[in-house]
Length: 489
Image (cartoon, rainbow, N blue to C red; front, side):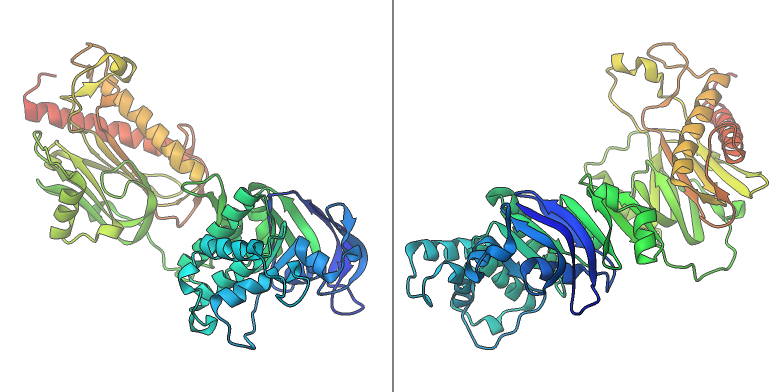
């Protein structure tokens, strides 16, 4: 549909864009990225004919763009510039109707039913029909931008060029605008080439990305191939971290500012408080956390941790709401707290501090095994799920990698299972050695300060402490549970 080959050009004799080559297929959305001054907008203006080429060619439908007349080119390519000037006051419909100019033989002297249909469809598509008689200057910036998108869509060109279409728009208008453009590309088969300032938006809405640096192409490909830490970091001269989008198979990036707070920070055993009601920990700074907790499960940064006791017959319709009320009543801020629940008496919690060359690891375990389960036999069980009993905290004074967080959870689970074997805990339904209980919870949190700890497998320095500490605390917690229940050991 559109082919750019060895294009150089710009505003003077010295090219701003240098030897750029790429092509875009029908119905594809290509995003152009790059730092300020990298040549993004200049490239788009060269493609649209606003700026001249010094070298190279632009082909549309297999023909050199230079052979098209102005109107012929406009029937092939619609352009949404970055800025719009309002020399005259027009209604929304009149503004959108200007998009039909390439299809006219005179100045709207041949307005047809086809033209009217195209304008009405474009307004409906962008959700602005209700404003058709409203002067455009009375609309908000986001609404005006949708009007100009409708104007471009009314042009019914198979290629749409956009120069930072979301510039100065709030997040709601950004989403609405890009949803509309993406839908148009998919449903109408329109080829879209858009300059983006926001890397994350470009990743979400584009099939491929073209990253420019100093007027040349630095990378081109699928979003996951372009939005890489080394590539983006080098071109933008910024520290970034990439991670997957929570709902789509698209990468997203986060800026990593220089750390300004250099005051040493560690978590100490004495900060963990134990009562008959709950085990609590409050820290001076948030810890990076991964957990299977009831409140704020998953990953995040938290500075308060609660392991709450509930009765064995606890049965609440809305557990989340009830637990939130419990935390708030005890002065815990909901957005900075991770909350667990256990039927075990929290007074029997076992806490240990384990020291290594890199620093210390704190372990907290509450363990009851009345509803122990052998996971290898769980498929054949039909007992209703009950409140879980083995809850484990692992607090690391160190800087964990993403891999280390996951390995820490694996190591801790292996250590817990070994403790159950040592204490000869069996599944009451199968009589086989238990591996856990029905709803165990596990938390790994780290200060993300101090020594870097890339791994937490069982033979690594961190993994050795976690394995030993979780095993030690779990065995002690099980013994305390047995004693409280009057079990014979």
